[in-house]
Image 1 (cartoon, one colour):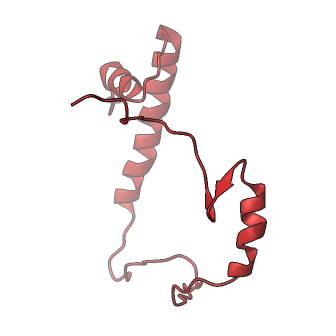
Image 2 (spheres, rainbow, N blue to C red):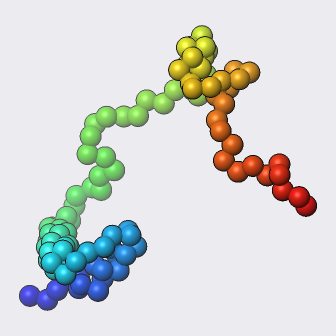
Length: 103
């Protein structure tokens, strides 16, 4: 059986995800991911001739509504839950204060 994914590829993906894997974990995940890829490859063996493409597996249909703001009477109740509010808005702390920059 040929491997569909190797440890270098798994290590690369782990580093992209900022994960540190020891040798045992690297071997375990390489084997596990190779098995998962193998399962997906079996799908190519399924005869799908004459089968219509499916865009959804559910008979549920999205019911879209017009994007209209309502229930503004709840605004005061929502602002009452905020740690600090001012002039009808939630007040948040300054993250980047550029007022002290001298240009």
